[in-house]
Length: 436
Ligand code: ADP
Image: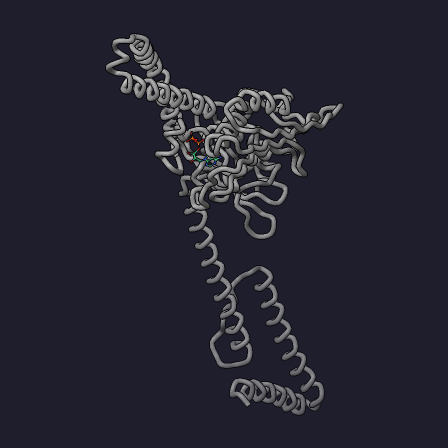
């Protein structure tokens, strides 16, 4: 038996003995014993109540000197209290550090629940988008960031595609938006100030557009002189080959400047309007008739009832580039197939050729500016390496994506997928298939 318990029992026995002896001295030993027991009982009750009050008030218990049961019980409680206090203070310090470090981040971080309601945010969020703790906690984030692209971004749930929107604070500031999932359905919205990057890319775009525009005038003059010299029989006799080469190169340069300008214009534009339905079937047929004169057999299979909400100039450029590539990179006389029709996700346009094909490792780079699989061959065929970059940008304006499948020596298929919200069905569909 531990000493403390033995001592406590001895102390109780001693007090009861004193009570009994005192009672016996006055002739009432039982009363003496009862008074001693009641005294002990009330003393313990008083101690328990005092302890209970201290614990209820979350006060620290004081440990009295001695080695009895009570000092040991109180020492145990005191030890647990000290541990809890230490954990709490460590936790508070940790939380403070986390808060300080998230507040020191240059990016705005907003924690959202599954309903996209604001739970917490850091200091950068207050600075960059003007969030206020008392006012905005619990509000839906799209009530505060109302840009249509952001609202659509939240609605579609495709958070892998990065988004850049103007800051709600104006001042020509731009924010990149990222949404990252964490625990259950909660999400972290990360907003980064990309004003500088956007400004630089706008400067680069404007520079390319201005330079291309300015270079066109001197080039037209040079091409005019070359043409005039080619018309002169004496000069043609002596300079026939160089003049022809100069004419080809000036033509190539003009095509390059035109494509650079087209690309800059596309980059500067926002999403294509959703208001104007466009007759894709007629557009495809027109382009096929125009290009079909160059020796290829173009099979056209289009759904006449299916229209697209978009811009004619962009989609003409898409069809023209894909068809002219299909013809450029396949032998004359081979078949090129164009298909336009409905898909479960909306609609699609495919252009298939049976030409040289593209190696698998080159497929991801096809839409890079000036990328040509075979630089020499591309140049010979008049390509400048901007056609597919234009196609990609024009499609992006229509929320569409380009997918390329190809096999070397067998041919390629370029597929453009348009979403349902851009696809409309004409009330009287007439299906048609034909050959140009
Ligand atoms: P280019 O003006 O050189 O054709 P594009 O951007 O249109 O530039 O195409 C980039 C490169 O992709 C081309 O140089 C060519 O190597 C390759 N390419 C494009 N379309 C096809 C195709 N239908 N078949 C084979 N290769 C193709």
